[in-house]
Length: 331
Ligand SMILES: C[S@@+](CC[C@H](N)C(=O)[O-])C[C@H]1O[C@@H](n2cnc3c(N)ncnc32)[C@H](O)[C@@H]1O
Image 1 (cartoon, protein in one colour):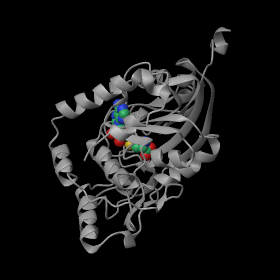
Image 2 (tube, helix red, strand yellow):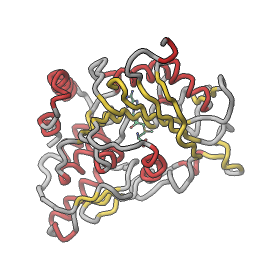
Image 3 (cartoon, helix red, strand yellow):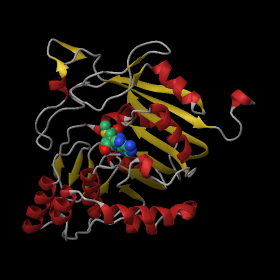
Image 4 (cartoon, helix red, strand yellow):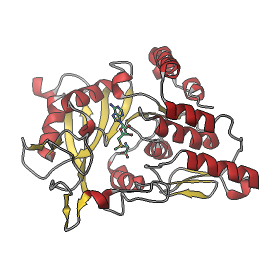
């Protein structure tokens, strides 16, 4: 049942130039994947039961689809096997036919911190880079977006979205199985591009910012959220070993440094709209993501330090504009 066709079929004319390339890229991905987990997920979601529901609430913390009264006992059992088979659930929370999926992250906390500062999302074509299972994509849709194209290379995330959207039936939102680097280049298509929780995973953060710039149309807005350190312009932490137990963390800039990177890569009107130290109520282990979580990655005697002695995770969100014409600095 893994399918991207209804999204492709509902793309508005702005996408016309890229639709063929997107379609080919998806076909190529599906034909060349060599991922045992994906085979397992495809088997699990081979022919899920269909159930139309009118209960679709995307504009609330627990993104909610369906009522338990919509299902019979057999369907209830099947639904449980899909949800269990797609563990761990990191981003959410969701409620599927009143089954609560309490995810590791309360992704709604991040959304609530930024949504009022983004302006109106109505009628926008939005790209969400590294969108996980698409939780924020659905919140963007609820805020009025015309289309939301999420991309994430993790098949588990793609399949979790497929399960939710199988019941939600929202053709203008999708999570496609791509890295940013695998998208057709220089799209210049989106009114708003989000990159949340991705920059610190990139070895070349300036290239990532340049790449995000190339996805936007003139006048488009970047929303960039990443981990930062306290500090002045020019300061940046590059942890040599692990950071909060993760071995794929590269650059943690200070906020002034991050702003200057965005300006260097051609963004204007760059502002930091929020800074927040991640709490153990926002990231914690749950029944749907058992095992370790933030609490285990912090120094037990000082929650402001990671277990390795680095500053504890703090995140900032930057918004910035792609210039409509010549950059002000060259005018
Ligand atoms: C920390 S999660 C952030 C998820 C979500 N954006 C959020 O803020 O909660 C980072 C995500 O980025 C994805 N990712 C990593 N490298 C990427 C790349 N080069 N292009 C797109 N996504 C990437 C990972 O698979 C992961 O799901």
